[in-house]
Image (tube, helix red, strand yellow):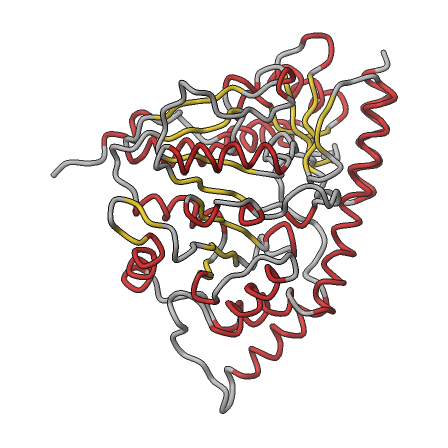
Length: 393
């Protein structure tokens, strides 16, 4: 038998595994030191009350006459309809069967690639979430990297010489926190339609957008229904990192090569999954109720306050950064020309602050560093104070 030799083309280990190894070694050598974690984007606030109540109710349902066994593979109607109505609030018209419930955005970002030939060329805007690259390397697809940097505000636009079939766009962006304007997204939509490409839009952080001139969804852009699909998550929006639920929107008007992508995904899901559990979907549906939305936004405000605290420290130090306002990440230029892993080691060893080296998001990330705003307010405040004291020197 033969194995998939494309795995030989992957980096030896995943970015966050490397970070975990360094942190574990430091903690073992310094067991008395308290670590301040502003690295991996895991939430620290618990699920909101509306979700907890719905989860408890769903557990009780499973103990009585309202017991549910297998759920519909593409998602329960009550959740698909709730997500459809959530989009309708922004005047985006969807059918409920254009919404597919999943166990999280990460799963679908990889699984969705099964719909596309391995001969397609993939375009990644770098710095990029590592899974975009790794999932395609595993399949053996060629990858084109479009460089993002300070000169284009980490928001590159398509050029006439770009040749790609699959386009990854993440806005608000992970890792940079940059957000595309309507005009910028329209250029990518126009490119996709003109070149028969498909745009995979990662909207995992849309709930953090506070500037209403910034699109929350690719489907706010004219022409997107014929070239784009959107993947979203409740992980950061509603604290579902340990609960796992997300969704993908695929318009029934999205067709390529004489095939309908929505129908293909229905066939894929009904073949390869048994759906997300009833209990989790009931909890997820509570996110989209008026009370759920109110409570979720209260948690998001706490994370945004973390961002303001850290941005104030960076402003005091005169360090360049982007993100923070419309996104839960802040992307900084490492001070004094330091490399991103060099800066990581400095913060860990000197002040026990953990962030994410920009180099881990691609070559364009070298010399930059990402902070997550999902830590506790107390830890974020202490981390900001320690950075000011350290870097002021």
